Image 1: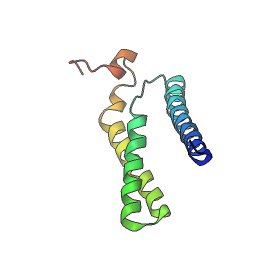
Image 2 (image 1 turned 60 degrees about the vertical axis):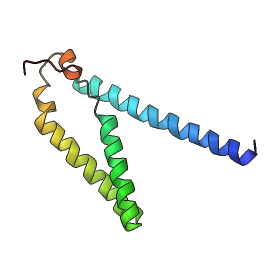
Image 3 (image 1 turned 180 degrees about the vertical axis):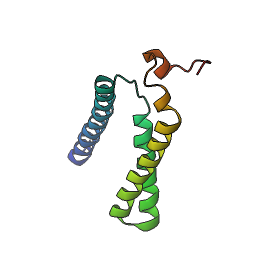
Length: 103
């Protein structure tokens, strides 16, 4: 194993750890502040990442990719808020993670 490979793997592990920390911190903050169990923020992160990668592949510009990532995550997040999440704010915490037949 070369030193370059070891350094690359250490940086990959650090990046992955920071990503997991950000996702976990987001879940904790949303639950602590709003008392709402939101498990969709990781999915929204991935939608933004996919849109950014797609926009970068098409345009070759990081700024365009960043704007596309934010716009896609915002659009999907607003759609989820209006259609699903706003109905669950005053319900029990189990209703946030388990769908019951009576809406």
